[in-house]
Amino acid sequence: MKKTCKGLAICIPFMLLFMSFDSQAQEQRESWISKSSLIFKAEVVLLQTSTINWSDPSTLGVVRLQEIFKGEQELSAFMNELVTVNFNDLKTVKKGQTILVYANMWIANDGIAVTEIAHEVIGDNKLTPDNYRSEIKESLQKADILDLKSRASKAELVVAGTILSVRKAPASKTFETEHNPEWILADIKIDESIKGGQAGGSTLTIAFPGSQDFMWYRSPRFKEGDKAILFLSRENFGYQDVKHFTITTAEQVSDIRELDKVRQALK
Image (spheres, rainbow, N blue to C red):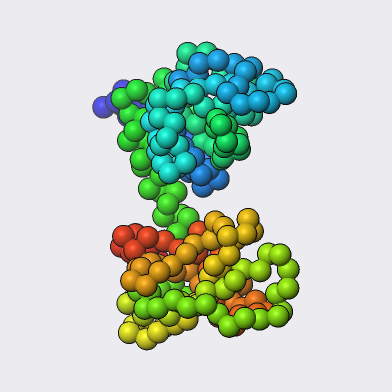
């Protein structure tokens, strides 16, 4: 019995240390995920070269895209094709490695190039060919919940609603620049108030840009019948030319299919 206890006394600290390292690795991965719009698996094909016309390839590498975990819309056309990655440190990358890349879009024209946030080598540490999918899926889910919590904490109102109608906002002379958002007003029926006490069944008017100007072209757009979850705050209440909550960034909108996830995040 004494021998068993002694063995446990030695093993437990090592087990706790191992669990601590594992937890830190997951937290780091979740941090990378939160900073990345693109996450994909790829094989490293070439180093110090690129698929784009770039004068200094010293930090660049070419990978073959194999699997997409985040950024399907941007990357799907390049499945099994070559992608250029601007690596943080090319010394940490070897030809022939299979890696998970956390990145953001850099250049997209004739070819595609991304800027790395971080990468993990499949086969190193606990990330193996057998478990990388489950590991990244778990981290994505946790990062998603943390992101929703953060967005909700900054919002005055979080509502699930249906767009009843859309119309152009009255013309205004207070936004006289080439970046005029050309506001569109949307009347929303509140199907569920998740935060902020907006009564269910009531209506709320929001404004979103209709302009295709580069300053606004990535803003969410709505049409009659759309359903969405909206994160609304005083930071986004009213420009000089429109006195409504405004929706100008993707972070202010979530797919209605995420309603259970949003409810869970706000518990």
